[in-house]
Image (cartoon, rainbow, N blue to C red; front, side, top):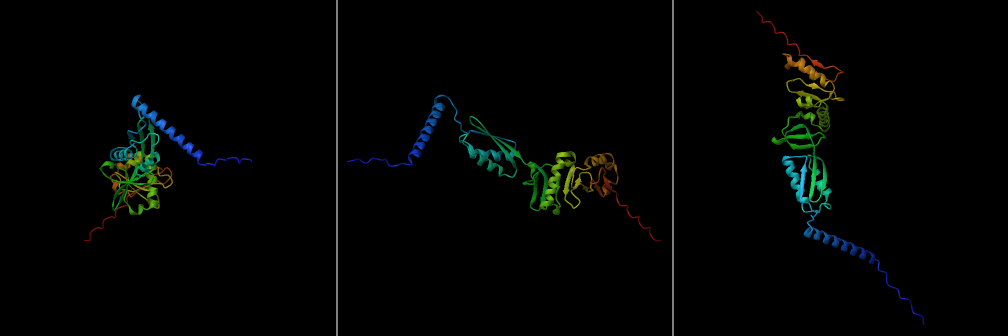
Length: 262
């Protein structure tokens, strides 16, 4: 009488169980070695105990410092959720970018890149800073009270008009900083950007294609001639849109007073 062969039932979960047990054992061994090293050999745990923030100051520095410490202090340095920290910080309007560096054994360094304001935007509900990439930032206060061009004209505060003025202000700051720093107000018009500078009541028409066109010529003309004119307050406009030429709108002649009748 032949015996039937015995077959063991298949256990598909067995390899996964073995792998899980192996991972747990390795983890416990690593944790144990770390505990022994830190307790008896003077090794430091790779846990975040300090957060260094650079690139900003004042209230902004304190704000980022507090947020980062709440999220990462006491967390493992190399297992910390850096993406959550990045998204929470970059969600702030004034933050353009963030670099995160892990400095063993216990330090996390954050380098903030701030958005730079180029305009003041005057609205009925307050005065706001506008960044060089068109983002509406904080309200103007004593901490950020820097003299930059103002946009007051309501017709210049449309999305397209304000975008054109932000682009013009950014270009002037980068290429003609001396002129940019003298501008008190910017307006948008069908002719192109219009600037008003300190010491001159007349509007200055700038080129829409090249906002820096003839700006150096105007600077020299103003210093050498315009500022010396006794009728400077009556000059009607300055037009910088012409090729290598600054057009000056001369004052209109005052009407001759009528002679009294006898």
